[in-house]
Length: 83
Length: 147
Figure 1 (cartoon, rainbow over the protein chains, first blue to last red):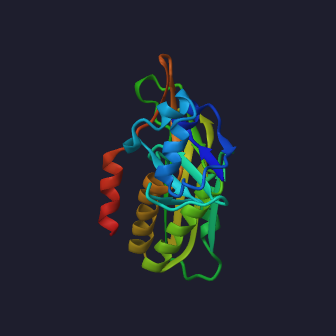
Figure 2: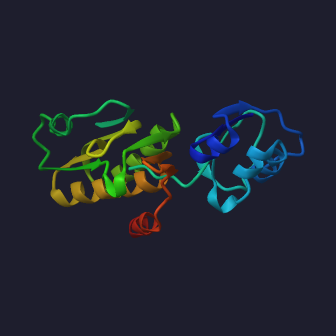
């Protein structure tokens, strides 16, 4: 799956996007967060406080309980501040 | 007619307003909003990060909702990205309708949704360093009136 990071999430993780193949047991956004958090200190720091994070699956705002699959585009970012 | 643009270049508010005025004579009101970079607390610059593709689709969804609520004849939204300095234009929202109430309300509705749903993020730059702007509770309170 394709994963994108924006704003300070990108700064903490150090990359703006990546393609990741996750184990079959990872079926939701929450499961993906748990999986990614174990990849290194940058990920752990970015995902430490989930209340500060928002997620989009296939460019739609959604919740952390959303189901995800190998062809999805998942984006993590802080609450938006445009306008 | 809708026009939605996300761009690094500046825009000309006068030209955007002129473009909202169709030729068929049905338009009786155009409401427009221009958001600027405020030079608060020694702000040197503001850099707007965005999620290409999702910005446009998210804005388009709210444009469709605005059109279902008000009789809109034409609508234009321009949002800039990249590094901007105090006084520079960030965003334009313009709505043309037969009457002023629809034009004012739709423009305000669209601005409220841009602030709380469109995936843009502001990084502020000061002498002391850079920091990401935090979402304002006030902005989330503002959208409740449209539910």
